[in-house]
Length: 127
Image (cartoon, rainbow, N blue to C red; front, side):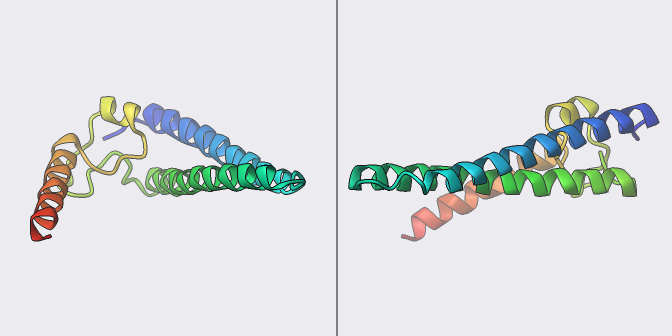
């Protein structure tokens, strides 16, 4: 169980990361918008298309991270932050500090990854 002080620490940390991620998203969208003004020749158009594709991939990652941060903040509010969604045990502070958006303890995460590897191998064998 997290102490009040730990909860405040994670709330501050996650809120700061959320702001940073939202700010980066805005920058990405501004970069895309600003890039449209540089369409003078075919080389510029190709370069812009490549840059926009890269920027959109970054934007997609940022959107996923933003959602995970918001979910972690909700778990802080409802009292489930730091509790493994799989086994119900507490997630160690060391893991929460390393990955504050985590929802699984190390053991359950390792089990999940092992199952994903098995599925990947099985799907490769099927082809």
